[in-house]
Image (cartoon, rainbow, N blue to C red; front, side, top):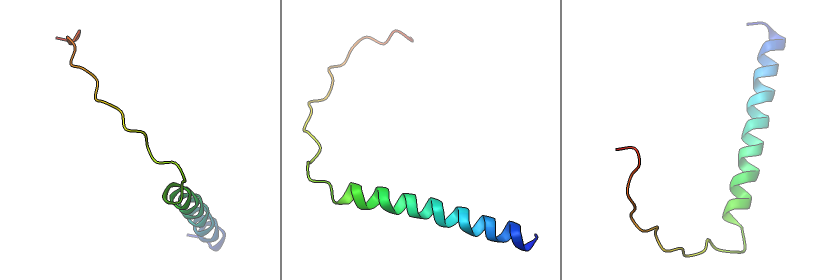
Length: 48
């Protein structure tokens, strides 16, 4: 593996980790909670 490919791989891993970290930070610090929704009633399955 050449040096440039190594640096590209490190850069891409850092970018993906940064985007994932921003998503998790936003998800954990959101103001509104998920709404309570009743489960859907059972229905006949058309795939039987």
